[in-house]
Amino acid sequence: MTKPDLEGQVALITGGARGIGKAAGLMLAARGARVHLADVLDCTGAVEEIAAAGGSAAGHTLDVTDREACAELGRRIVADDGRVDIIVCNAGVCPPGKAVWEDDADLEQWERVTNININGTQNSIAAVWDAMRKQGGGRVVIISSMAFYRGGVIVGTEYSASKAALIGMTRHLARNGGQHGIIVNAVAPGVIETDMTRDFDKPDLDEIPLRRLGTSEDVAGPISFLCGPESAYMTGTVLNVTGGIVLAD
Image 1 (cartoon, helix red, strand yellow):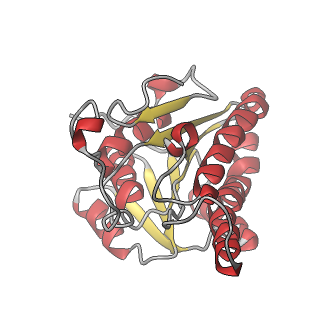
Image 2 (tube, helix red, strand yellow; image 1 turned 45 degrees about the vertical axis):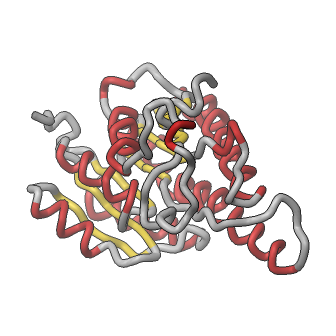
């Protein structure tokens, strides 16, 4: 049985309407956290699912590329709940792409992907960082990708570059947040079956040591671990959740 060891804590999950974000919300709520789900998509279904399971959740419409909107949401959560203990930066996009720019459309996609994946993550963290510092600590979990290690095949260079940038962000924030009690770690998923990746070509399962694709719950478990007391002496760490495709840092 899941222990309510996050009772009284407040969590914000971006990209929380579906997939990994929703699964993480369900797990954190089951551990007693008050969960705020933020997404450009409607979070109502995810909020209702958490409530049906006995958890506490609220949904918010948020475009993470809007810096002021992120800041306002951070202020609202602190005003309503008094604190923010956890942020899971899950919002991101991974459209099929190319190795190098060939036309204006490719450049536009580069700017869109990096804006959402990099700037959106920074905007989200900036919205809660000061509150965490003032209250004496917090947890930041950044969702990267195995593309950081291996590069991508279907996705474009902009995706791999953005996910690599998030590892640099994780390590920089971990070094600077530690003195304030802010713990910052990352999760790097492999090939995960979600709504966003459903139409992608899937790899040969023989290429995956565990011989299956990952699920949102497979990623939510490590996220939940990084939000709990079990990981209190870990910061700047990247957890690979790839079924064995990536075997070392």
